[in-house]
Image (cartoon, rainbow, N blue to C red; front, side):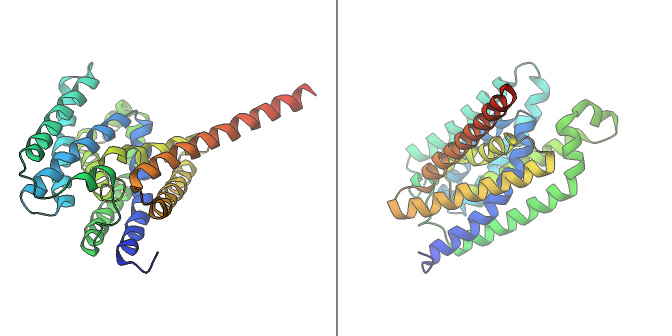
Length: 272
């Protein structure tokens, strides 16, 4: 399996994704912004369609357009504070409308199916270098803003009073989410990107550890999810996105079951 160059590229990109997705997902889940990640992942389809229409790298075009939609969400959030879900409908309608118009008109000079479901066959060494650069920039930015992001995540108003520039950091964070989605879409696919961002974090949260340990466990679960997803999808000749999403849910259910069994065992011991 590893003697194929496309599989080597896929595994190298997957390692980067398994670190980046839960790092971003941790802040999104704890801020209850999981649906923003889902909306932006669908919005990336418009970026892919524009890239294919203009014959440019679809990862770059997806990053640029998804960043734009992320910034639009942040701007609209200030005007629709009581109707946050309405913002997502507006952005989703605009982005999917653009994507459907371009694809249905035949202006996109390629099949978008590989971007919807993910495909290791289409991963090139050029994609790996693009993902490597976007991932490195994202990781450096998260590292630099780590303390501010943690403060805003748990107490946005307190962070504002403490002098942290919430608005600017939220814009930067939106761009980071866009970068994460862009680097993931080749392997996992647009339709299930949000599962890789949210589910490993949801699984790690069940272990009731502190913030940093939960982040470490999220990366571990993400790594297992995506590696199993790629290996199994290779052997059964299926799209890796769907397999990875199924594995993510099964691992979450398995951890929940272990947790229930542990609680039941403790109750039984107390009663004895």
